[in-house]
Length: 154
Ligand SMILES: [Zn+2]
Image 1 (spheres, protein in one colour):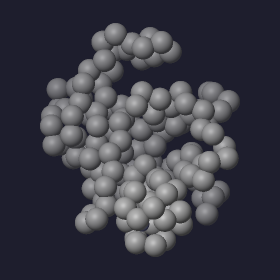
Image 2: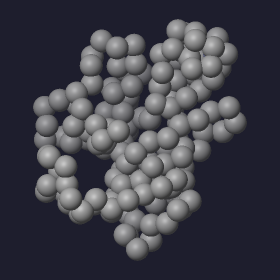
Image 3: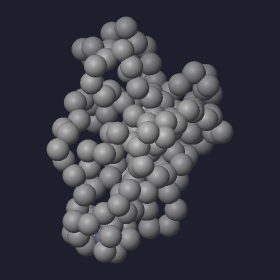
Image 4: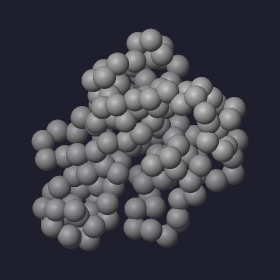
């Protein structure tokens, strides 16, 4: 899962490639099956419930709770400058029949000694803007944290 920290190159021709564009513009998208309505995050072009290949994007709030977390003291290659840092797995609050989890970095609004299991967080998509390619990562912030969204995509 470490590639979700943003050092991944999104393949531009997959069916869910717009997911990266939406994230770049500040919107977190789940996929909703066009056949059975199952909503899941990360988006899946092919429904895990009924195997339908029809889907549309549904924007999710990014609210969730901490399922587990860990402090990284020995950085993997490419992250030496960031170390130490704390990451967490978020159980996204998406409502009945919906599911999703993601891995993110704890952001500046949450002090290290405040981090605990089941704490509510707001997931905020962020970009490594100094890099040429789209490099997205998720920042875990206090509930109510807002961020600027671009309206350049539909
Ligand atoms: Zn389905």
